[in-house]
Length: 123
Image (cartoon, rainbow, N blue to C red; front, top):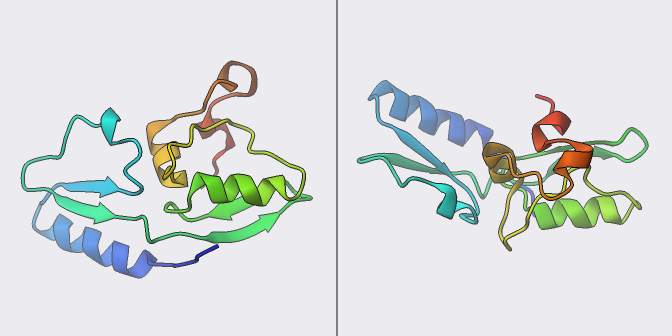
């Protein structure tokens, strides 16, 4: 799994755009762009797809920390190797990321029985 912590760079970009009151469109894998109403005029595209990787995973505690650009497929493979699964069932459009899944609130067909993705996110 690729890992890349770009928090400082992303924070600087947000500060720069905020200082000039420019709208920011946050993008990642682009798998959910069909849900978007389109980019704002003159907006800055903040791509978080390179900000990825699992920070920590404690199978016994059922706790996983990962960055926004981490592909859902990588998370599924990681927990599957421990005989576990994500508590929610996010659709994976091939390039779905954790950040996009949380931002769009896509929880999958198990939602009525297990709850929403937001029910399993801390932080």
